[in-house]
Image (cartoon, rainbow, N blue to C red; front, side, top):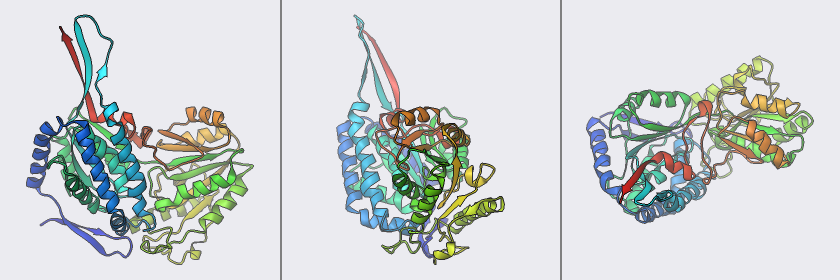
Length: 461
């Protein structure tokens, strides 16, 4: 029997062990998804909505237990994990359910005498969802609920760090009465994923993960004419203008940098501050950072948990040391965080100044509780630095001037542009990236477009 183990970052213990699906299980899953979709696609949107709403109900009823499981699997403090369900998951799922009827409606066109013409949105077929561990429910719900609402069947492959999330989805859909075969999950290896993508019974791939992972998905589907949604890496910048509300900017950017131990695709990893505000901003930022309580995430007082694994913490520490060797200055004394310890996932937050774009800490994704802060002279310099990146997921500006913010937003190469907020997905807006942050769209009405295909009816009377 081929198995894998999920090692908890809390204490390095084996939290879960699961069997890896064999070829027969994969074949049965693909065959079931394909055959079930032929009937599921003919259900009404109202019927699908009833089931999906009850699915959300299951998650809300079990949010505390799911939150505890999530803490054990990936280390986020238990004071926060239930809110992934009760806030973000609920908000996104309900929004996509609410807009489905209107968004998926038949498209009318101007009529011509003697003809009937219209466009229908048909489901693409079977959607393979490849979900990550860092926000395992928030990232997966973006694709799973709208895919099912659009009349598709779904196969979910979750990260090995968070396998219980896939199983919880299955329990929720069973509770809701979803017909068997509409949603399924598999615990499988990367090579098996690649083979599935090549299989003609997979019609769309929704992937969230690294740039390397996105490249692997694209390579696997290179011989097929199917689409993929790829949400990949980020090195998201923030720009604090001279007219910014300093207190508000500090509070939100500290949270945007360090929540979830910085393990967020759209977390803040680099900050540019007008030189006239630089000292006050940095002083306030460091003072607030020191308030974090790093420790056992099962304790309610903990506000910063361990990173997902030791290797991730080591990677970030290497970036920090490389920056310091090249002239950067670390402003946080890690000894003031007693549980910070090299060679473990427990990593204190760090703030660096004296940084520049010759350093990886300002150009390569860190995915850790680390941020570099640079002074700048004006908007032009800020825009140039924000755009000096291979990534483009989100960017934010902190200012009282909304008209100027819009002008800056037009020039910044990003999928989402924020003013006076960061690290948030509004389900009414398209979630997308540019450059190496990926391609495709989830959420909003546009999120349904990739999960359906247009079919034109041109009928002569």
